[in-house]
Each structure stands twice: as C-alpha cells, then as structure tokens.
Image (cartoon, rainbow, N blue to C red):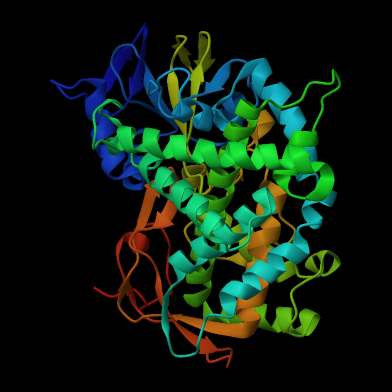
Amino acid sequence: MRFSVAPVFIPGPRPDPVLGWRGALIPFGSDPIGFLMRSYQRYGPIVGLSRTEPVMLLAFGPEHNRQIFSDGQRFWTNLGGGRPMPRDSAVARVSNGLLAMNGEKHRQQRRLMMPSFHRQQVNGYRDTMVALIDQVLSRWRPGEQRDIAQEMQMLTLAVAMKTLFSLDATPEARTLGELFKQSLEISFSPLEMLLPPTLPGTGAYRLARLAERIEIYVRALIAQRRALGAAHNDVLATLIAARDEDGQMLSDDELIGQTYTLFAAGHETSSNALTWTLFLLDQHPDVLADLHDELTGELRGDAPTVEQSGRLPLLDRVVKESLRLMPPASVLVRVSTEAFQLGCYELPANTTIFLSPFITHRMPDLFTAPQAFKPERWEGTEPSLYAYLPFGAGPRMCIGATFALMEIKLALAMIIQRFRLALLEGARVDPELRLTLRVRGGLPMRVHVQDRQFGCAPVRGSVAAVIDLPQGVVAA
C-alpha cells in the first residue's frame, strides 16, 4: 500500500482504521526487531508509519544515518517518546541527562563531561575493573549453572557503582544499585508508562517514587564529594571538578541527571553486549578456541594491561562482530525541528524518525552474509561511521564508548581464560528489545574449568531469525 504524507507518498503498513498511526506502534512495540526486519524487507529504506501528522517513519541505511545523526540542530533526540513529566520533580531531574538534551545545552554539558571519558582517564579505571570482575568470577564454581545474563548485570553494576561513585559492595551501594535497576526496568517498558504518574500502582507512579529515593542518595554523595575535594578519583568527582572555557560547572541538579544517565547507559548496554558475545562464542567453538589461544599466548592467565589490549586482534574482532550482530542500542529516535527532505520525500517539522543500527548492520551490500558471526570480516575492513554504529554516530555518539570497550574486553579475557561456559542443551534464546537488546528470561550456562572441550548445544527460540547459527544447531 502507498499512502499520502503531505504532498508525497511513503510506502508503509496500512493504518489501523480506528487507531490510525497509533495502530502501527502496537506491532512495533510488541515485536520491535521482527517489525523492523519485516518493514525493511517489504518497503525498503524509508517506511511510513502514519497517514497524517504527526508524521512517523522508519529510515534505514548509512545515507539516512549520516543525514540525520550528523545534524544535531535539525534532528533532536526524543528520549522517552515525549511522555510528560511533572516539572520540578525528582523524576524530571533524574531523567534530564545528556541523552535527553538538545541544542546548545547538549553541547555545553557534553563539553563539561568529555574529560571524564578521555582515554587516559578511562585507562586509569583498568585496575578497578579487573578487581571487580575478579570478585564476580571468584564466586563461580565448576559444575554449577549460572544465568550469565544476570551475572553480567551484576558485573557491570559493580563496575558502574565503583567507577561512578567509589561505592563498594556495601549496603548503601546495594540499595542505590537496586533503585537504579528497578527504575530502569520500568523505563524500559513503554506500556508501563502510558498511565498518569499520579495514579498509584502504575509504572510511572513507581518510577516517580524511585526517582525521589535516587535523588536523595545522589545528592548526599555529591555533598560528600564536594566536602572531600579531590579525595576520590571517580567519575562523579571528575564531573564536580569540571569547568568549561567560561568557568561554568555542573549544578547539583545537572549532576543528578548526568550520573543517572551514565549509569543507565553504561550498565545495561555493557551487560547485554557481554551476554550476547558469550552466547555467540559458545555457538562458534572454532572461534572460541582461537580466541583462547590468543589470550593465553599473550596474557598467560592474567588480565590484559592497557598496552596488551592492543596486541589482541582477535579479541577486538570478536567484540566488533558481536556489536555488529547484536548492537545493544538497536533503535534510535530523532524528531525534526524543521521541514526537511529525506530521499525523494519532503517532510514537515516534528517528524519522528526511527533509525536502526540493527538493520543497517544487516544490509548485504554493506556486510556479506550479514546474519553470520564472522569476526574475520574485520581483517583489513573499516566500514564508514554511518554503516557501523554500535555506539551511534555524529555529535551524539556515545560518550562512554571507550569505557565500555575496555570493560567488555577485560571481562571476556578474564572469563575465557578461567572458565568454559556451555549453554544448556535446548535452552531458549529470544532477543528482546526494551530500549536495549537483551536476552529475554536470561541465558542459562554451565560453568566448567577451562578444559578446551569446546562445543555447542542445540538451542531453541527466535534467535534463529536474526543470527545464522551453525548447521544443525537450532532445535525445534
């Protein structure tokens, strides 16, 4: 079907006769990955979702990514889908981080935050990360079953709490970490947020109460850091000390929003990236064996130093390929601030555009055998910034990309040298997109000492629709 948007026609699914453009969001919300794949396969790189204003569409591919992600003035972020929040409330302050900012405010805040994520500053967190990863792995015992998705969440939670706030595994840290996790679960469930925040029992109401408790904790930490001065070398202390060229600094309200955003972005995305990488390695035992050889040959059982990380090319290729196949940030949203042209279509201001690294990474003209896990594709290959964008692209590219890559590589190097993780035979693996791409219901794996008895068990689930698993692996 073809339908009219202003004077143009954009191919797309038939609008619901009763719900109109909202009807298109029901299949999108219930199965985002399937909806994106079907839409691209049927309609091409631009897909219309609404017949009349507000105009909503999907746009796929490097050309559209470049146009929209590179122009931060014309295309603003729309984090939260425009859900109203009470002004001067804890939930508004907690939510007002870098990901929700636009225009000059975004540029000013990003400049203030950049020194906290300079490569030299990030390298200084290496020893802290190693110690925290070791603490998690020291609890694993050969023969036991672990939900690796949950374990990776615990690992990245510990890293986030320590590097952001210098908090160890104390009752205070566990309480704050649990508040963060609960708030993210609600935020990642759009259906929970449809009802008003003043109605008790709704997701929005619970989020508002959690935000109030988070704000109390973080304000106390900010006051403590200001009193102690340079006594801590964490991200919060660095942000407190930051000044721009005009001498401006972050206010306490801004610090609350930025630290919450950094926690949300760093904790959830890194844990999902680690989970999917361990799954992919389990399903590709030849790659896992080669990676183990590389790691033990260079590291001899130790965690890589900053210098050694540059001498582990297969580890780098494995991580790149995992982020290509299963990018945690699989869908990004922008809203136009003025009229613009996309392809051959003239579109009005306030057009909502959904872009997808997940779909771009699966375009066969960009990546051969796009649904196959092939780390070797990265030997001598460097796609454009808008063809491969696991951390986004343009002026809003993820500020913590260097931090996340160090954390992921350290964790993989330590896990693979110490343990062989084997997916339980017949386990169900279903990708689930709730702002980030994760495994629905967890990833059950058996822990073994690293005995190099690499193999792969049959799996069930919808993962077979998005990844080409080895022949004969997928069970009915």
